[in-house]
Length: 167
Image (cartoon, rainbow, N blue to C red; front, side):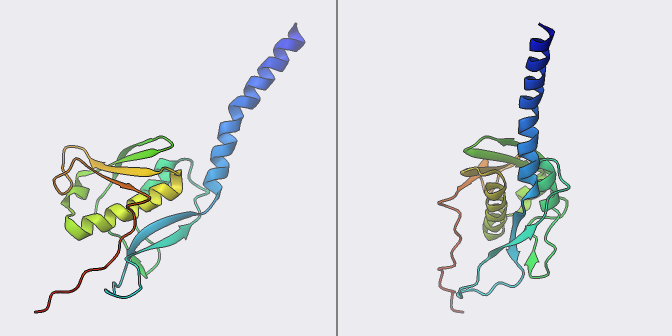
């Protein structure tokens, strides 16, 4: 009986350690952080958003990685699209939808600046979590008149197909 109990306890401990091993393996892979390109060249093949690959071994979870991401890029070729002082308030993650709540500073962005920042966050969160859709929210504030901005893999592409106004 003692032997059977010991085997059951050992199996339970083994099963409990599997998610931790999986989480550690996920954090060991490089992560792409997406930021705005420092110099925008309109009506060319250059992109507005580019990736910067980072090692995230020292971080224990998705929250720590995203807090690090919001600090901005390391490359001089990229620039943070986020307002100063922006913080991650909370997040909810399920396989299809990742919801991220940001501090009030994010609500100060409008129009193109807001869309670029949302595109950067969505792309980073989708790559990091595997979610199909990202919902970006600010508690107690609207984003261009909306309670949330949802971006999925199909709506992520930002194209510059506008003709400049002639002055």
